[in-house]
Amino acid sequence: MGLVQLLKSQFLCHLIICYVFLVSGLIINLLQLCTLPLWLVSKQAARRINTKLGYCISSQMVAALEWWSGTECTLYTDPKSYRLYGNENAIVVLNHSFEIDFLCGWTFCERFGVLGSSKVLAKKELSYVPVIGWMWYFLEIVFCKRKWEEDRKTVAQSLQNLQDYPENFWFLLYCEGTRFTPKKHQISMQVAESKGLPKLKHHLLPRTKGFWVTVQNLRGTVAAVYDSTLNFRNNETPTLLGVLSGKKYHADLYVRRIPLEQIPEHEVECAAWLHKLYQEKDGFQEHYNQTGRYPGPIMTPPRRPWDLLNWLFWACLLLYPLCLLLARLISSGSMLTILASVALCSAASVGVRWMIGQTEIDRGSGYGNKEVPLKSN
Ligand SMILES: CC/C=C\C/C=C\C/C=C\C/C=C\C/C=C\C/C=C\CCC(=O)SCCNC(=O)CCNC(=O)[C@H](O)C(C)(C)COP(=O)(O)OP(=O)(O)OC[C@H]1O[C@@H](n2cnc3c(N)ncnc32)[C@H](O)[C@@H]1OP(=O)(O)O
Ligand SMILES: CCCCCCCC/C=C\CCCCCCCC(=O)OC[C@@H](O)COP(=O)(O)O
Image (cartoon, rainbow, N blue to C red; front, side):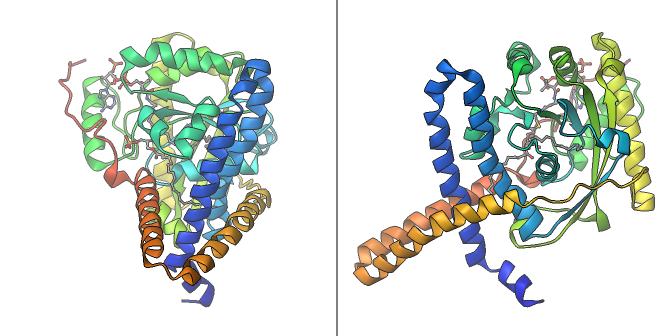
C-alpha cells in the first residue's frame, strides 16, 4: 500500500471529511432556511440561490468520489445526444443495484453542470436525513410514500411545480422503486410471471405508475428520457464507506436519449413501453457482463475543479476554528470540558455513520420484500 493510500485509509482523515460535510451542511441548511422570505418576493431568485447552496453540499460527496477515491466514470453514448446533455430538461431512468449509484448519477450531473438543480423521485424517509434530506426540501425534490393512493395527488402536484423551474434539471427516476436484492428480485419475478411479462435477470420489475405520472406532468417541460444503465468493472460492489476510505472504482454508464414524443400518453401503453425498456436494459447488462463494455462510443466528460474547490473552501473555513478550539481545550486542562467534547464528537460520528447507513442495501427497506397475492393473467 502506498503512502497516499495509507493516508486515505486513516480514520482521522474520514473524521475530518465527515466533520467538514456535517458542519458545512448544517450551515447551508440554515442559509436555505433564511431564503424562505425570499420565496414570497421572488420565487425564481430563491430557487436559483438554493441550487447554488445545494451544490455546495452535494458536490462535496461528488468530490469525495472523483478526487478522494479517484473513481473513474465512463460514459457510453452517441455524440449527437451528448451535445444536448446539460442543455435541456430530462427524465433519467436508472437501474438501482448499487449503494453509490446515486453518487455516480450526481457525478455526471456535476460534469454536465446540472448538479445543483438535479431532482429525484425519492422515498419520504430520506427527507428526514439531516443535511441531504433537509437540503432537498428547498430544491423541490419530489417525495413519495410508495403508496400509490397517497402519492398520486402529491407527486403530480410536486411535478407540476417544476414546470417553471428556472434552470435546466435532470429528474431521476428509479423505476424499480427499491434496491436490488435476490429476495426482492425473486418476488418481483413472480409478479412478472403473473402479468405474463418476460423475466428480467439483472433488474427488478419496474413500477410503472411513477414513470407514467412523471411523463404526464413533465410533458412540455422536459425534452427527453435518458435511459441510463450503470455497472461497475470487475464485479465490484462499491460502497460509500469504500469511497471514504479512498477505494478507487470504475463506473460505466450507458445512456440513450429518447425524445419524449416517443413515449405513449395512455397509461397502459406507457406501462408496456417501460416494461419493454427494462427488457432492453436487461439485455445491455447481460452484454456488459459478457463483454465488459456497453455498445456505442465512449464520450466521457472530464471532471471539473469546482467540486474540489468548494470542498477546499469549506475545509479551510471550518478546520481553522476546529484546530483553535482543540488547542484551547487541551490547554484548559479541564477534564470535564475534554470529556464533554469527546462525547459530542462521538455523538456526531454515530450520527454520520447512521447517515451513511441510509445508503447501505443491507439496511434497506422491506419494500418489495413481501410476497403479494398474485392474480393470474
Ligand atoms: C448523461 C448522463 C445521464 C444520466 C446520469 C444519471 C443520473 C443522474 C440524474 C439525476 C441525479 C439526481 C439525484 C440523485 C440523488 C439522490 C437519489 C437518491 C435516492 C432516492 C431514490 C429513492 O428513494 S427510490 C424510491 C422511491 N422512488 C420510487 O419508488 C419510484 C418508482 N416507484 C413508482 O413509480 C411507484 O409506482 C410509486 C412510488 C409511484 C407508487 O408505489 P406503490 O408501491 O404504491 O404502487 P405500485 O403501483 O407501483 O404498486 C402496485 C403495482 O405493482 C405491482 N407489484 C407488486 N409487487 C411488485 C413487485 N415486487 N415488483 C414489481 N411490481 C410489483 C402490483 O402488481 C401493482 O401492479 P398494477 O399492474 O396493479 O399497477
Ligand atoms: C464528503 C463525504 C461525506 C461523507 C459522509 C456522507 C454522509 C452521508 C450523507 C447522506 C446520505 C444520504 C444520501 C441519500 C441517498 C440514498 C440513496 C438511496 O440509495 O436510497 C435508497 C432508496 O432509493 C431505496 O431505498 P430501499 O432500497 O427501498 O431501502
